[in-house]
Length: 250
Image (cartoon, rainbow, N blue to C red; front, side):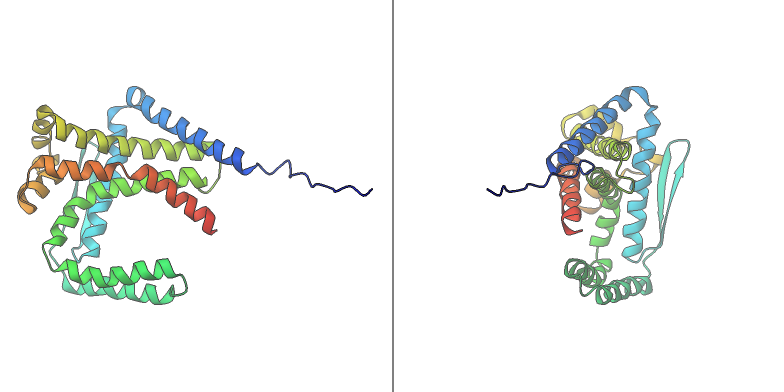
């Protein structure tokens, strides 16, 4: 009788279940490291980690909507972004650039649609008060986008696909996301936290959530904090979803 021969899996190639379990392991180690960092690392470490994507978020949204912008960070614990006046020519250049990019990537449907939508939305938003709202919110949104990217890299393994890179990415994402959750939760629940926030702007400037609440949206600080608290919950699940989708599409 002729028996059926079963092929054995390559010993050098990890099983999918083991690989997934390993990803969760290093993600957990990264979260643990983020928790310990609050007790071990200098307080300014997390501030600088958040300040970089925060100011880049302001500057990126500003430039996209036609306001020449440049971020700056001081070693003394201050950060700000210079936002220039509206330049209509910059708005149309951005819209044209996105439209050309959509044409180049027309065979990649998701990217093409996203770029085409951006080309339409940029001039629609840039000449309205919505631009000021988006620029003011762009700092914290930039932080959350950075945390999302970190979690996606933790899932895919980044460039090296090593436990060290997965852990470092999870730690960075955790620190930034936790900082945003802590800030918004404090603004929602604590009068002392709100008082500290209202009197602690860099270089005497008004903090972003106050600008949104008092100057742009005419609502309470707690209302803005509630919206941003919900958004601050998204980086981990969204980052893991993006990482999973990127691997599935590769």
